[in-house]
Length: 634
Image 1 (cartoon, rainbow, N blue to C red):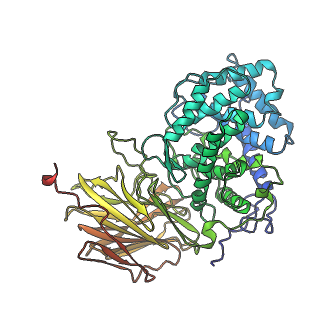
Image 2 (image 1 turned 135 degrees about the horizontal axis):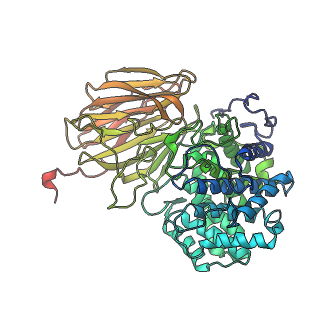
Image 3 (image 1 turned 180 degrees about the horizontal axis):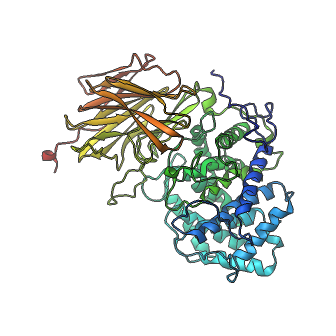
């Protein structure tokens, strides 16, 4: 058994407000419930300078979202209120009275239409729908200390503001659950609501279930962390609000799916606590830990308590050690440092505070086993793993020696179903993602196979058409310059071998490995005929790409960039450029990963026999019949 990776000890100069670590209770992270409370307090205190006088809005520094500053101010209140509610309820109200008082004042001012800080109304498909759900959740969880102590006029105004959700139209995505949450809270306080709207939102969730614990976020192949911080989370929180009003069968179905999801989700965290860097809204950061706590809250987790805390504390610690929150106590728009490449049009200065969901565990009492059981290693800490996930079309492969999790993507593009146009996103269209890297943003050559047009423009991957995903293999096809390009991935240890079948020879082809990034300086670059690699000097992390078959005299090069990667200012990607109708490429990511001794041969039947650098032999056959030429297509 490989010894688990232990994160470096806390640097007290970076975290002077954190309590001492506890190596007996938490031998892997050192963190305890007291650390979670300290970070929560730091986040809440950091917001105070940006509160409006009546505490109804938090106007944080940074560019506004497409919804505008008025809506962004509400977002600051709602998302931080969720954090405050978990902190208040988790301590049974034993917090400084100022915390309760300022959110009570904000509720009174924000719902008063005559107050200068009043909130924008809830309207069809508008951002206040999102924030209404956070306010409803926070009011429910902190009910004895806030809702029950508001005067009747304020309670009436709050119910009236939330009540604009009744009969409104939400986006047909995770937004349907915001309506479920808000109207269930209204039902819990005797306010007008529509049971049929709650039921319809929950039924729509069933439409999106694809098995194996996975939901798509609306129609199409939209798989990402919204499974973690929305699609599994809100059903658990809805059941807490609904209580005896909830249908037992519906609650049991959600719990079973969450349990199955957590069996997989535990594999998405590296030994240093980093979650796999894939999907949208990544500025929510450690919100990826939310379903871990939800499983414990709902008695719907396969994980031992010590594993739950190890994974959750690991990811919170990972970000706090890397500048989130920053020296002001603020969560900035980015990943570690501020970085616009992980943002969407809806991202405003307070958007990152959906990370508050990670603090759901504070609702579990201090004597609950998730807080008192000794930490246990997570999956990546002790063993190498390969996991096929057919619903999203992903292969996960991790290595205990360096604690890295890698995700190979043959199914998720986040595109609406046809006839919607194809589009490329760096966070969905890449062949692979990991816990140690981030994609080049905007689109770069990393983890991408491109046919080059005569002017040198690389083809996008566009819509991904899954073919299969099982064992150590996954395959898909996409259109490049009007031709069907099929790719089969075979994974073993830190290596992935990609077999590309391209129905036209002589067209220039470019393929990239993993992009490495570093804030201290450019990664070290090396290249030669048929290979290229980059290495980070500080820790030896290395990304390598090697042509095993079909690349002939391909040139290996390194593409360097600056300010295009969420993991660091300087980045570099190893790249191959050549031609061929059948190309086999070895890509590797890790420390001390050998790449010599690998090769690939083609059998008469069209199967590619692969030998990995450690001598392991696997094969990759054609995943589907060859695509006919243009003249043969009917």
